Length: 290
Image (cartoon, rainbow, N blue to C red; front, top):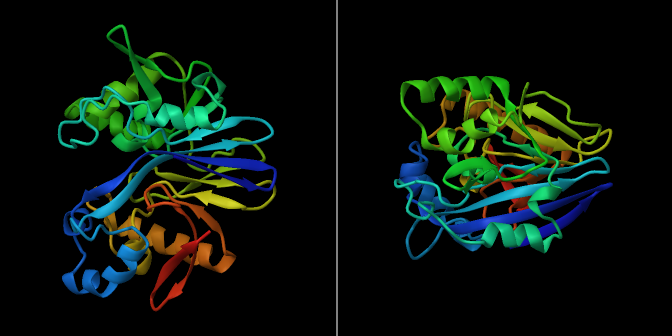
């Protein structure tokens, strides 16, 4: 599945790898109360963010491809194929062509990607960084430079050295070993159309991606927000946030600005169409289709 939109002189393509009822709401958002969920169940189900049959949160796993006058940029590379992900059955040893068909549907091949940007180095944002070739993990995009947050990489490399992390081993370190990675600050400007914005909390050096020449036309949020419930209740952090307090602060600050400026937000995990603007709702925010 792909969705294409024009933003100024940029084109943004959305490539969906999977969109499924994925996780129990209380497991995913530990601070969520039954009262909060019940009060918001109706609109969550209506927008496809909560599956009525299973009671699970529906999450979309996807990439964005940004075409600028200068570069073709892939933002976040999803889950990938052939990866050992035993704790997540939908991802484990996946071997399908859904993501690659999505890339082909917008007229691109892996050789057309100039830059791969990972908003952070979690498993569902680095998977297609590499492919299995003759028993070895090698970079999937033969001409691309991969941009990793410098502090983000340092943090996960240190964690991996203490306790091996599968996605670092198979989807990040092979890129480093191939000398295809550039370690950048989370406020790095790629060109006059694409800039990074520090949005820490979910991970130590998480960044969002701001696009638009001379002004902000849209922001690719990465994982500063996962579910529309976190717009309604910005203080609610999800289970994998490394710093829940910082994540909540980042999220509220982001939503305040996005609401004030009517910013188009391309979210990583909201259900389709995933692209929204935010408006105020009591002490929180609600999303409207972009």
